[in-house]
Image 1 (tube, rainbow, N blue to C red):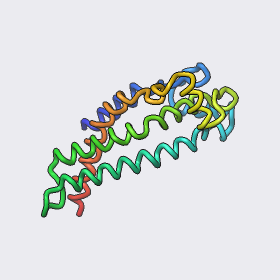
Image 2: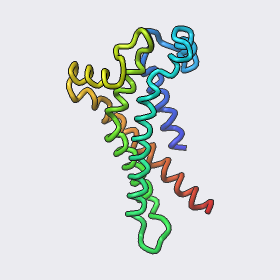
Image 3: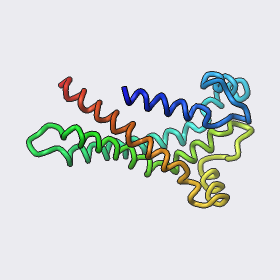
Length: 170
């Protein structure tokens, strides 16, 4: 129940994260329709490459960290660690994955902020260079505190429940 509440709260707080072309939308479907009208199907996939790169790296770090901590904190002769150890492993896995991945998320968000002819960037490299030269290296770390504060409870609960349910199903 707490996990659902946290996810709903986060979705509510981030629902108007970026206004496309200076316009606010009534929701994601309204946004997709507007992008499709202006840019076609190609506009709906703007930033897909950086999103895939971010997710591959993020999930690899996330699951590797969780598996490492889970195994490290499992007492010898037991199948799984205590509830609190699973909770901590999930939370730390989420935080570490965002620390490693925040720069790619900043670049992804900036690229997706404007689509097509309104884009400020010609690609991933151009976005990184313009962000770094225009705002400095700290610009690529924007939001890391917020993401980590959100990541710990969400991932702690998610992975703790997941591993507990998986163990019960076996």
